[in-house]
Length: 195
Image (cartoon, rainbow, N blue to C red; front, side):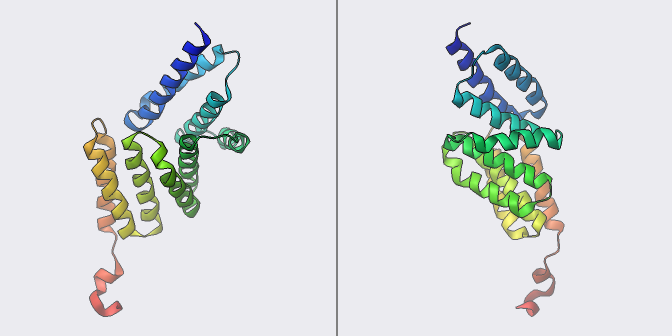
């Protein structure tokens, strides 16, 4: 197979990995295995594919809760890849936010997610907008900013509901809505007394 055919296949598979991570997470490992096998067959990887592959590896390690060593390895490689496209920066920021959230570093996660939100215009997938809104809503929920979480969650649900094939994401939004509704708001409990 010619080099350009390998690279075209690699690009297609990487796009598929980004799709299945949201739609069918159980397929993510299979697609990643196919990508790894293809990369192993390439004697040399151009810089743009190497950067994309590093971001994908980092995201895969974070999303699959791999060892801290594996996550650190890919995370430390990110700054060395200095010619990121805005799209790649979006995914790097998104995965950094996901890692920070899983470690309980909520303000750091929010910072990374907001950076990803700023770069969202460079990512053509509409569902990515829903995903970043959902992640930001989760952070705000965890820090107790329920009203703000609710706003971002409404945006995420609107997007997920308009796309086909994301029933788990719609259900996750509804679950978070129910959790937000259960949290007592002191201003609602005491009426105008706190004003």
